[in-house]
Image (cartoon, rainbow, N blue to C red; front, top):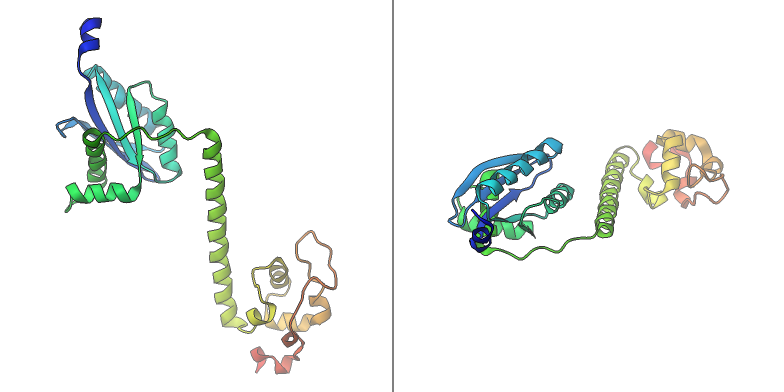
Length: 245
């Protein structure tokens, strides 16, 4: 094929659907006639998997000289972000669209109502890419990627803290049920320090109010008389404490 005929030749549109997952992705490749142009490929989340995906694009680009790839994938977390950045770096004619997982699932259900697998998920996205030909998703600049990652870490930390607090509530409800009502916020730094030093009702009672008030609000703060503010129930004598009744 000479240069002129190559320029005039119509583009060969190939849909590439990638079902993303934490440890590996499943890619399908369909022609405009919605027929496979290559076998499905599992892309592991490492350099080998990404190199295999690049080689698959190279093979198809050599086979279909005027190939234009319409790649559609899920917006599904950091592993999808890694894949998106990799795909944008490839030296092939690619229109990359990133779809919302809910919309992708609805499209899959419309064309594969009785099937659900990684292959049918990726085939549905490949079909969407080559038939619907969505516009290119905007490129996210590195600063926004960093911001997204920071927010994700903060949200994960909040979830972890909430789970840990709920576990502590559950444990205290079994061994010291009045504790939460006395101290208020059991997740505060002061209360955590107190429980580390006096991890049982008997040890807390034995410590006495004077020592309890010396508990610092953090590991670096010097003890002071106002660190721990306790309600009057703390002043109950051991024999009147609900845990000992």
